[in-house]
Length: 116
Image (cartoon, rainbow, N blue to C red; front, top):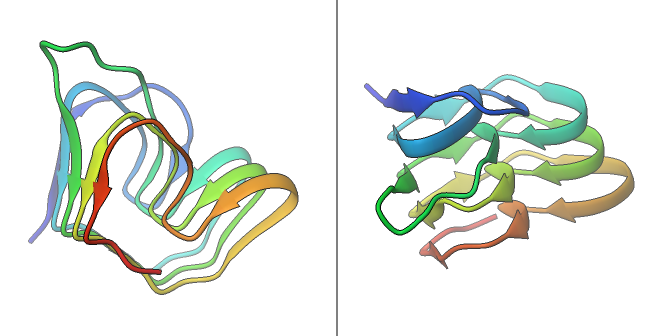
């Protein structure tokens, strides 16, 4: 069973709308559709910016739902400052305006071993 541990910031996601500072989303699966005007993600809507003494991770996650937004839509997360490891997006990602990604729409951290 997966879990979410951390704080909420902003966004819409299948597991958490957002994470901020000392957050970990581990082994979570979203099978539902996610729709938002901005910041829609299969697992997490968006993460806040962490500093060197904090951490944010999304590990071993999977999305199969359709993710839809006007802007900033990602199969796993829309805007990320979190390290993303071993995640899979199997769902469709749709935007009506701009900024879309199969795994992450706007990335500001390391992404490793992920597939779309």
